[in-house]
Image (tube, rainbow, N blue to C red; front, side, top):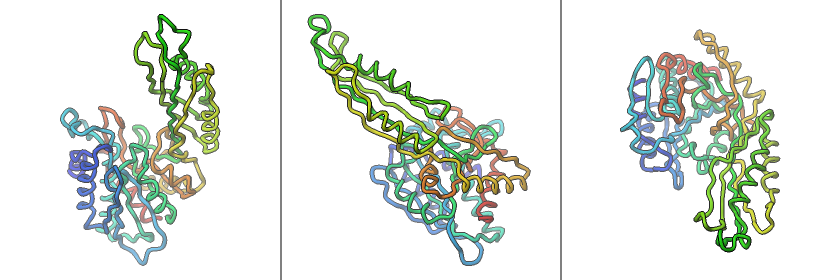
Length: 365
């Protein structure tokens, strides 16, 4: 398993470099070919999406289980030069090892174990790896929803939460807005009164936007990027901001989108353009998801592992499947820390039990 994880990590696959993603998809395809019927789907401006129909023991299959993952990472091409794959102190380090190449390896080894031990599986099992998850899943969402809508359950191979690897029964919905303010330029010293500063207007709007957050309801609003103006001696004619939003409930997403659309300028000489919205619905904690978690907890206990559940502030493709009403359990991948960070790593001591849990879930479902 360690050797395959190393192969996967050293095959870099940043979202914005389709040839690299496609090389990784080919590597996974070759690895999965003895275990599955493999097919790829075009990803538009992104890399190919991969779907593997697993060949598993057991009688004629009834229903389907969808296992979801992604082939892309946030790390730019060449990151390996300064952040190589390495093994140290019972951990495996490297770009994408935790989020989420180890989870893909765990799943493939779980399937291999079921085949080698001839453990019957009642459901058809699909593995889908999307090439654009880290950048919003624009090209893969329809494929994910198509396969999920005819599945009885979805297992998401994203890493667990925290150093104990809690599973995820809820995730916040994720969205983003872009505000562009148009003002009127003038000379800042000679004729400043004739201008209408887009920068000043934006600054006032940012206070208003930040006040839309309701932490007790799980609503966060973060104006994370701002820019505007051309020179300090020119009253700014344009300024803009990019704002991240997170919500726990679908109705909160609709409400905050309405609030953004209702924003009006303080200075009537300025105008405002708002674009964007919620691009991942929240994965709300549901009865179906909780049933999956309780099954996983019981199966993990047979392995001597005490599983807990968690809410994540980040999104995954499981948000889409849960929003369709399909029971979804997330965080079944690696245990470790440092997603999107230089210390990204997994715990080697948790590789076997995570793989066994996936195999037991597939057999039980």
